[in-house]
Length: 351
Image (cartoon, rainbow, N blue to C red):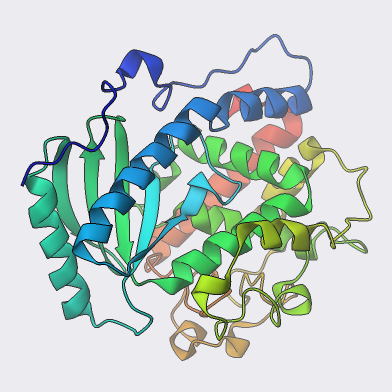
């Protein structure tokens, strides 16, 4: 099956800054300036955003032929407010509102893969088995790598939740962007054997802003503000609206707007290098308070877990792959080394 999805010419890589390398102007005088310059360089450009939506529209047209009642949702960093210029496109197909078995999910994704493999503009089409199976491919027309999830409503709810947090305080996206930049600079994923990802860091950052900035936290607790609203798991996913999420964020007013991003960044590393009790406590934006592992919703996290970062919607541990003392000690050492460097130099370029 061959199908032309866009009538326009393919977008050349010279026009697409999706893979551009971000550099920091070292002549800047303050750490704050470095953060804001990095933020400006790393934001998803209007060109990339339009290109992603063009691909989404074409995929929607294709899927309508295969699954007449499919719902297609953009998820992840493209729309959650924490995206970067090199972010991939993640979408979730909701073909029913019943939970699919792993066999059913794999079968349907394989069917889509077979169609894509005969498409004119799709390359590297493959089924990837992670926490749940996804279909991954590269689109030649847009030079975008896309990941397709199937019937994972929690990924949609999570996207809306993260968008809420990104809108709560203008410092939060800048801080998380800088922390992700730091993670790439120190090769965090490689050094701890791919046991940590950007979502883990995002949850760590939000939790830090809930519990360490007292008496006026910068980020709200999930339970207090959201649990009976748009993110309740019993609400039909079709009734979620991203603009409602943005409006909901306006209700939250951070009372302490005087703390600079620089101080929050240094405080983040101090909190996890020195203050946080990893052996005994859980990182939980659901409660936004000090929480012992004995209180975990997931019984397996109460024992033999070096780092527990609770997924706020379903209670699983998103850092469960940190499963040995060696990996755990390496992670803590990276945080301590970074804190010592950044607190003494106040320069991002020292990392």
